[in-house]
Amino acid sequence: MILPRLGTRVARLEVQRTRVTSPAKPVIMWMAEGDTRATALQKAGLTPAEVVGRVVIYVEYEETHPDAL
Image (tube, rainbow, N blue to C red; front, top):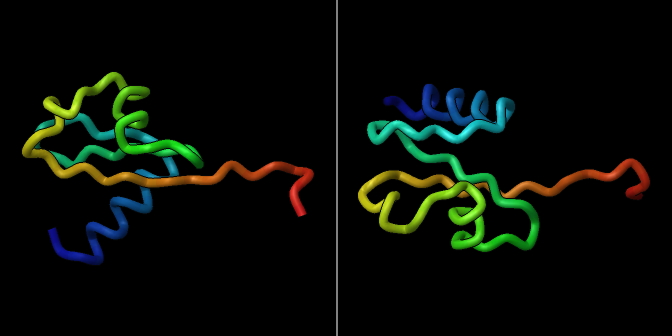
């Protein structure tokens, strides 16, 4: 997959907030502020052994609050 196409795909996944689970595709792990990689895997119901040999993309996001400055 060429780089611009990969960037487009990752952007689309970010909008959908999905986690790809096919062994042939990367695993997208959404991490809330303060999460670690281990807790993100645990929240997703995965163990480190299940993602061995797969591409894992950790995306840390910050929730916005309407009262934030």
